[in-house]
Image (cartoon, rainbow, N blue to C red):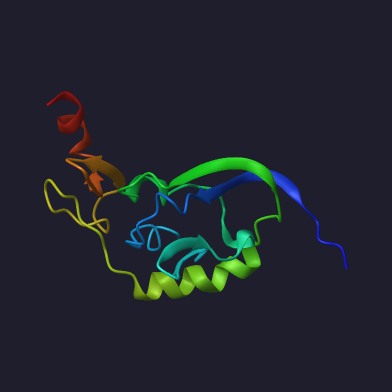
Length: 129
């Protein structure tokens, strides 16, 4: 049985930089990343859509995107994982104003050495002071 491969964007995790904090697990809606033996690991490449939502929350910069040969993204395999995560998710909040992601879009941000979330309304204040 041959496996089809494609060249696409996928998350790469540098094990030497990874501290095992697990902050990257939650932003991965498809469930491609888990903590294995104390390190973040892409457990199934077909679940990584390459969107990179996990990158911004990594406090050590261990996660990057790379373009390489791998298996295609499997939408059908990801759907039940996404549905389960949506049913059990904990809303994140903007570190500046406290608004929930249920009320306003949030983006990952690094500030003061921390990886956190900021809402779209607070971003200009971060940029312009």
